Each structure stands twice: as structure tokens, then as C-alpha cells.
Amino acid sequence: MIDLRSDTVTQPTGQMRQAMADAVVGDDQYGEDPTVRELEQLSARLLGKEDAVFVASGTMGNLVALLTHCGRGDEVILGDESHIFWYESGGAAALGGMPFALLPNNEAGEMDLERVEKAIRPKGRMGYPATGVISIENTQNRCGGAVLSMEYLASLKAIADDQDIPIHMDGARIFNAAAASDTPVDVIASQADTIQFCLSKGLAAPVGSLVVGSGEFIQGARRSRKILGGAMRQSGVIAAAGVVALTEMVTRLPEDNQRARTLADGLAKIDGITIVPDAVVTNIVIFQTEPALDHVRFIDSMAAHGVRVSNYGTRGVRMVTHYQISDDDVQTALTAAREVLSSVAVAAD
Image (cartoon, rainbow, N blue to C red; front, side, top):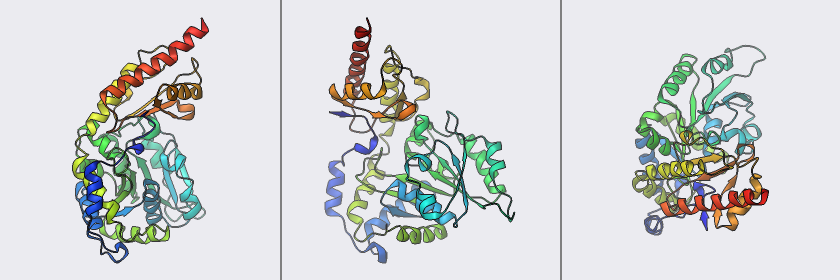
């Protein structure tokens, strides 16, 4: 079965499994796990920040960051297509008492800068919530893996700095963004105060994410992690796979991005599929099969052909490339899609 539902389905590499078996560990809550500290220090260095904290998931990492930036009742400015809003179970509201100031994301994943500036609350105004943080996402999942431009990030940072508001970047796939834009990851990270990134997506580790930022911020983030029940003990066993992910898997990400573009170009040639291939720049491919074929029927039919893809609701169907998807797998998926849509056309005749 070819699994294109997400890059989270990857299996750890043999090198990761060996590193996990051989990991030197200690109690991380006492700061005594050398493998966890190695991973945290490596992450901070790669992204150009002072320190990092290892967490169980991207969702936890984002929530740790928001809890550390904001007090109860502080408002979070973020896009209406953001992962934090759609897929993180309302954790910021449920556990942090944070309201969202939602602004539209355009197809490039951007929020209008004038609207962002207007959404920042005047400080000390009675009756208004305080603006706690501006949250952005790079790459922007629901916008087809869009990469935020450096020009946009710099302009947003200038607005935030002028108003003394921090920026948090949900950089779950920030290394894909760096590969697609040919921009060093620390240069992208320099435009945000804190960044969360995942080890368990394109980097193929079995579990884990990092939050990076200033040393003072990460001290607070460790407390937030503890509140969420996310502080761990001998977690070097899983951190070891993350070290391998950062040292061995980053340089191959352009392959995933290129295979996604090959998928997009091939899908565009199939009658019944609507897609803009030029919009596919990283490893996420989103397209429509309606009205030719209901999304659920398309997904079920693809599974019958040995290809798993995911339902993205009104957005359409999603395919995501990763290190276990080969060039041959891409061609098999295209053949399956062509056969599924051809059968619909034959039935209509």
C-alpha cells in the first residue's frame, strides 16, 4: 500500500532505530539526559536561537509556546486557515483562556499586514484583551504547503517589533520551507521570536517536536510543558532518533518537494481533477475531484487501487510526499488516479 495521507506515516530509518537502542539516557526532569540536551542544543543552533525544549508533539509545542507568551485572556492573532485553529482541539482556549483574533489567510498563507496591524490591541485600554502574540505557520498546511516569503516575514516582524508583540511560528515543516525557498532555516527563524518544528513529519523521526527561542523564554516553556504533563524522564531514547533526523534527513527534503510537484503536474493532466501545479512548492498536494467524483468515493477508490490519500473537506483531496515515497510510487499513484477518474467518465457515457 502506498501511503500519501501525510508525512507523519513515515517509519524510522534503520539508523534511527540503532541510535534509539544505543542512546545514553538520564532523567530529563533533572536535566540529566545527555541525548535530550544534545537534541535541544542542536535544534537551537540550527535555528539560530539560544535554547530549545523537547516536547511530545507539534500540538503540544504550539500550546507550550502560546501558554508561555500569553496570560489568561490574552489574545492570539492568527490566520483562519492555521493548524492551531483547525486541528489542535481548541487547546489555547481550553487550557490557556486565550481568545483568537482570526484574520483571513490568502492562497499564499499570508494575513493582510494592514489587518494585522489594526488587530493589535491598544495597550492598557479598559475592556480590551491584551494582544499576547502573533502566530504564523510556515509552511502553511491548509494553503497547500505554501512558503511564507522572506519579504512578508520581515514586514510582519517590523510591525510586531514596533508594537512590542512577539511572533510565534508554527514551523512544523520549516525545513521543507527552507528547502523550497533555498533559504537557510536560521534565516527564516530569525523573523520569529519562537518556533515550533516537528521531527515526525518530513524528517521521519517516530515522535517529537522542538520549541526554540531565547534562554529566558525556554525556561518558561519548560514550566508550561510541565503543566501540560509533557515533562519526560529517560526521553533520550526517542530524542536519539531526532538527532539522526536533523543530521541525516534534512538534506533530502528537496526530493519530497520535487516528487510533490511531479504529482501535481501529472494530476493536472487528468480529466476531472482541478489543481494549480505552480502552487505546489513543498511536499503537500491539494486538489479537487468534484464535481466529476465525490471526494469520499475518489478516496475509497484510490484505496482499492492500493493508494491511500486523505480527505481535506472543502479543500479537496490531499497527497503528501515523504522519504518512503519513491518516483515509482508517484507514477503508480498517478496511474491509479487516472483509472479512477476514467471509470467515472466511462460510467457517465
